[in-house]
Amino acid sequence: MSKEKSIALVGFMGAGKTTAGELAATKLNWNFIDTDQEIEKVVGLHTTEIFKKYGEQAFRTYERNVIEEKTNEKKQVISLGGGAFMNEETRKTCLANTVVIFLDISWEAWKERYELLVETRPVLQGRNLNEIKELYLERKQLYGHHHFCILTDNLTPDEVANKIVELYSIPISN
Image (cartoon, rainbow, N blue to C red; front, side, top):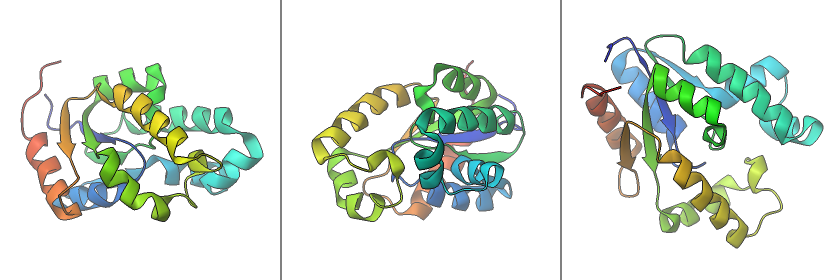
C-alpha cells in the first residue's frame, strides 16, 4: 500500500467520522475533508436545504462527484456521509483509491445520540426509530466493504483517532 493514499471514513451518521477524522488528520498532519461540507460549498446550501430543494437523488449525485474528486487526492482524511456507501460506484472508488475504515457504532450506542442528530440529519426527518433501525441495518451491510473496522461505542474521539492512525500503518492487500 502506498503511504500516500488517503483514508476514507465510513459509517452510520453519528458514529464520529467527522470528530475522529479531524483529530486523525491533525495527528497525521494531513488535510481533513468532510464530504457533506464540500457539497455545501459547491451548492451554496446546507445539506438539509439541498435535500428539501433538490431531493436526495440530486444530493447523491453531488456527493458521488465530490468523493470521486477527493479520493484521487493524497494524504487526506475524508469523512463520507452516512449514505455515500449506498452507491456501488462510490464504494468501488473508495476501496480502490483509499484506505477505507469503517467506524462502527452499535444500535444501542447510536440511540443514545439520536436526540443530538435528528435535527441536522435530513435522512432522519420524518422517520420513527423502527424505520431508522431498518436504515441502520441496511447500511451496516454496505459498510462491510472496508479495509479496517473500529467499534467506537466505548472509545473517546481521541482514542478512535489514534486507532485510525495505527490501522493506517498496517499494510493492506488489494
